[in-house]
Image 1 (tube, one colour):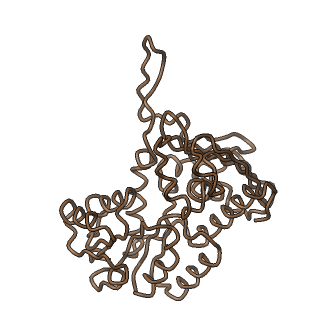
Image 2 (spheres, rainbow, N blue to C red):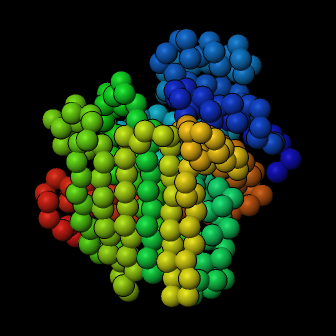
Image 3 (tube, rainbow, N blue to C red):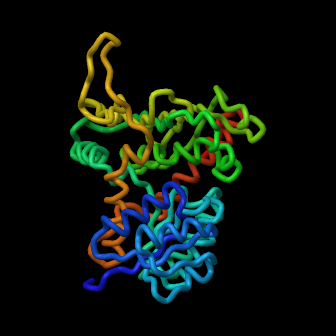
Length: 339
């Protein structure tokens, strides 16, 4: 406490740049001291627009930079486990974007490394836990406002990208459910009190982007997860929405229900004219969760400075991966899969 946290970021793509802006311009008690990217233009942009002074093309030199206390990893998922472990071994606190890894052995390796370095913070980016509306819903559930919560219906639906550019990343993303629904999976466990998942079933279709078919992936998918004790969750994920980004979650309890994010409204303005009644929709996930991303990064910095405990654990991330993998297996097998 007292000293400012010196943070470095690896990965300056679409989301990485947003995290970099938050660290440099909006997060208290920290300095964005370094950046790492194999793309020289991204490093130059970080230097010129955000004033980042230490630039690395090599991840090894970056993670061992003695001028850093913590690192933020916004890199391909296939690299997460090894990079988190390297950061912990280098004495750095580490934030890594979701999912933690694409298989359970890698998740377990990261958990083991974190146990060996108990003084260092290791956090996975489940940003929806830091959204004000989801936090309000969780508080209401915990207070018994809807009785006992036993069903969650949640969706992550992206606006259609007609170019299909995301197909380039599909081979390393883990598929639609691991890339999109992992947030919904984490939310369901959180809202339901972290029950153990037992079985999963999934189905899906390629509505538009035929390039996903050779990869065994889909652009629209549904999944059902059965939890110990009778709780259930239903997930829908889509990459083909016409109107914008729509994330919503319904929590059903024995005495009521809660609905977060219905309608994808950008604001509270509703226009009525000769064309009908309408509102403007959110463009993408970052517009929807811009405040949550800022709060998430502040929580990481505060935890590294010893000012508060993290609200989620690596074990939570491992369980999200475990469930996501079972859903993906079911999509491909057409059978109910054990979790």
